[in-house]
Image (cartoon, rainbow, N blue to C red; front, side, top):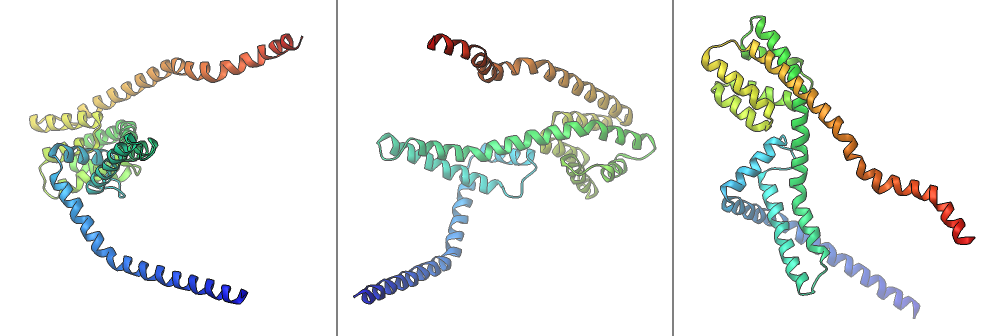
Length: 272
């Protein structure tokens, strides 16, 4: 009797394994077709998306340095797909079909790529703003030594540390060497970085190029202004630190101090 039950169990396990294997092989065979359908759906979604939305996505990605793991199509597909799931789950939650936490999870998942891009773009702009004054000083020295703007930028790029600003300068140099107009190259440089400091540098360079004025002295003045602004910003943040620390003090440190000071007194009065 026991051997019969064991035999039936083994046969059931083997049959389940064979069925699962066949289902997996069928799913693998359908995977290219499913991927092609998904690509067509994403392409249709990208074509139907408003031009303003596509421009916003493109600008966000450029300001964040165009991460390799994310492009315009993936960002649009993830946002629309998770947003649709959030709306569907919210509708079901209103009728009591699912928990109210499910649409919140889908909504946060849809917003997560945008929040990550915003944080990455902010960190990238801060890194560019930190490095730009020293790069302008180097560029000023090369220009005052007799080099033209293209040669000066190439020499400065060779001595820059790897980072966002170096990547953008190398990109601009590549486009200039390909014969693209200087105004377009520097305009795209300011748009890609989204940095106000780079935009000021670009405006200065283009104005000097249009009027035939020397660029080196103006870049030196701009570098000094940026350093002064950074020092003022650091002083402003230092002045704001005591105000920002009041909330953690009131929420966490003061209650603990009061508990240590007055807890034994309260306990003695309660037990006395």
